[in-house]
Length: 303
View (tube, rainbow, N blue to C red):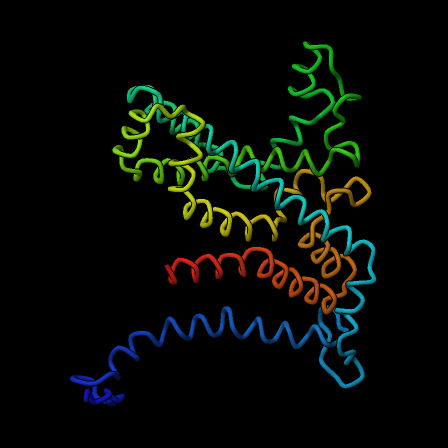
């Protein structure tokens, strides 16, 4: 019978030294992440603004959370956030897959030149991306100049000036910035697939579509799951790109949960309600992307 090792308070031969070495990191996590989260959760049960203090009179219990589900702007922001997230991720997957597959087909000399150019948008700040695309969507900007060459105009695609297309316009801007990240990750995944699989597929007479869906896609499944988790968290909490591009308008047509929380905190001085929105956004992210990711990992462990 193996004797279970117990904790020893010794610097030389015990477990005290590793604990002391981890202590600074643990304290940083505690004061930067855990404490603000717990304190924010506490504030969400009160009704206070900036500079206010906690008192029994300001305690409202779950009223801020109940208000969220009866707030039409909050419901609009939730729908916009979910639509933006799924639209952005779907486009990132499709564009990233096509471009990464295309780059692998190029000659090495061409791919070495093109890959750095393709990944350049990833280096641009989301706020700058929003400002760039604001000028692109300007009625006198470059987009409508080229649309005019083929007989189209702002009436055919109003861009950020109309409620019907403002959210789609922000999604397109997100594709431009984030697709390079997907290209980098998928290219690494494609290079890790054994070449023997494709040789066997070619011998069996499989075409490019069959090869993609029977070999490439299954081999990239884990890569897609990781991309979905990273992009999902990023898109659910989207703020800077939309704020710089549309500000959530027109008429709240592109407002996200993060922008609405910002508006409640800094424009309406309703800090408690803003924190409640943020906590519900965190729970929404966990339900949509966290739970499927956990289930995927558990299913892998049971194989």
